[in-house]
Length: 199
Image 1 (cartoon, rainbow, N blue to C red):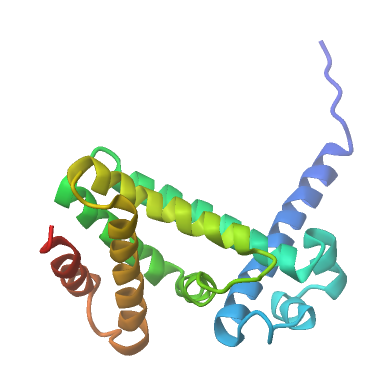
Image 2 (cartoon, rainbow, N blue to C red):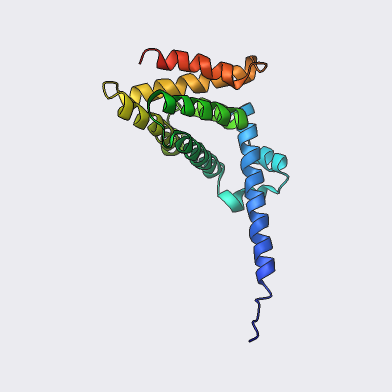
């Protein structure tokens, strides 16, 4: 039996791969520029130049600068939440918090520009992507809150999760910006002493 292959299939696969690469380059450029300059000071021209693509490619792939930034937040949130869930899986109590703090520090170290963007945007209001930033916050905090609710039911899971996440995020950025000679274990110990001792 003879099979016939669609001669357009390799070209379509190549085009899809090229489009994924273009989108990834644009997202990477956006995160780097926004973390350095802020959203308002970053133009689509800047993003296109940094990504090595035509300005039209940015609009073709994302529609607008605001939609691009929403995509940055959504994709970053998915990556972060999946990593945190994997770290907490099968753990409880202090062991789970230790794993979450360690994983969040690893994510900050691996994606420092996204961490800076998150810190800069999480408390701003009136932005087009306010719902997306709330989703990033809610889903990331939820992993911590679930551990708190299961292990320390007398605590307010939402506020305790915010304290844990915030302490880790700020300590992680402090570490990368001002104390890069320290190891992740030092930062983890400092955060855990702060967030676990009161429990």
